[in-house]
Length: 296
Ligand code: FDA
Image 1 (cartoon, rainbow, N blue to C red):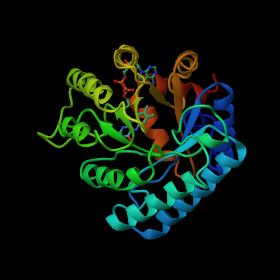
Image 2 (cartoon, rainbow, N blue to C red; image 1 turned 45 degrees about the vertical axis):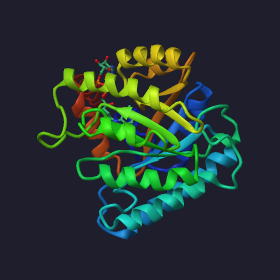
Image 3 (cartoon, helix red, strand yellow; image 1 turned 30 degrees about the horizontal axis):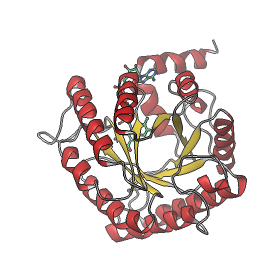
């Protein structure tokens, strides 16, 4: 069982816990992006296990009429074992998301049974960008509006990657970037990352207004969300805001009154490393964890 301190950031260990969380979020007007915790697999076994778990979860979303989708990590689907295995596993997850083809396919929208048909590709550390984008380019055109990929603003290459994906259907989630780029391949300073985020966001709104395309912001930064509001008004393009479970929950509710808001909900037995990262990244989280331990 997940202890009380960790359950602010992780739904639970079981599929039932993440399905319950998705229902609760839907009742608050928020969609659920569910991630089974797991990464950096060096053998096929755990990758196949997670693929099956995602396939079952996607079927549950559909049968329960949840506005929910999944987000997968390339190294969770076997990228470190073999790029072909990763692609093959991605197709299996996307096939399960598409199901019998019912639904609006956008991963957003009406919250009806048909909304449960979308797969996000998280972007991991250096070395994974190229195979991840190549997989998105290979799989998304055959499943238009069912697949999305994450781009990291702190990488220098992302400016070209936005251009490269301009004609590819699917959504792009822009994040600041959780991994330090190798020397000379990006920026680390917060101001420089913010400037890059603003520039890439502008380019995404310019290039992703086509059918079956979309823009998502994976950020808790109010400045970036305000910028997206003005870019959306200028370009007449919708966008979605995605935030992590346990971070700015009040703000997620407030934004959901007039924006398409999705919460990234991690779950599964491998929760400890994820929880430790959340605690370490922000002083408030350390204090929160300490208070919970001390019972006050
Ligand atoms: P940043 O950390 O710069 O914070 C900016 C502002 O946001 C703060 O000044 C404050 O106002 C507010 N804020 C942030 N955290 C807060 C908190 N805990 N409480 C209150 N206010 C807070 N990365 C990656 O490399 N690959 C990926 O696939 C993903 N995927 C992903 C999905 C989703 C849904 C999210 C939200 C994030 C990711 N990320 C990611 C992580 C991302 O790259 C980044 O590291 C974190 O989101 C932190 O950056 P922010 O944009 O939130 O802003």
